Length: 270
View 1 (spheres, one colour):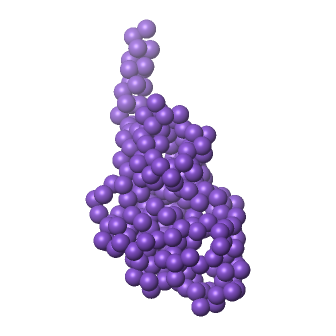
View 2 (spheres, helix red, strand yellow):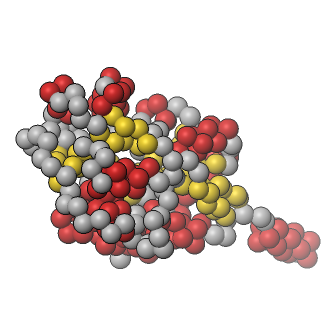
View 3 (cartoon, one colour):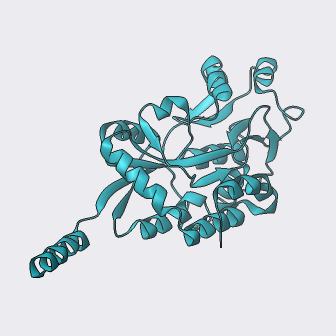
């Protein structure tokens, strides 16, 4: 009896002192300031770190998009925030079951009307070869837009770097670009932080629907262990409630109405 008791005590003591798993979580968004409303992921990251403990320790790391993709392929304990699901990415990444962000449909954002709505982007490019449209490097918009960027390289200005979205918004506000393809809330928040009052017109793009960003991990045994643990942790009701609230506060009533039903499919806030 004593031997069994000592064995059990030893087992639980070992489990209690076991080192947590280590995850490097890559980000490629550079906040413009300490304003935590700049995006949903900036606000949700501390919550993820909190609910992950004690089994999992998350170390955030800010990198360029291109470097993040390189490291994700090479390191078994590397994961990343806010990645859109595509069949190509699923070949080398595990995706979490729940998104960390849901964004309204991407829009063609400009300082003047460019077309009737919804915009047929390919037709617009053909009719106006002088247009210069800003997009971020290494980003998957959707299959149709990604293909157009390759087919019409002279009409797209591709910006790389951690703060690509903010720089593109700034170029639009200064009328150095005719348009950008982005989420309206990101562009308007970016211009506001820079003190630019230039009105921005959002035009719907044909065939573009809302998008979800997921945590992804390297497709390895350790990556699978990390993503499964996160799947369990993200069932926390308080975490889910905070995530929904962050979306509502960031997007405002109009944009939030476009994503509310989708959020409720995944989350059960308190």
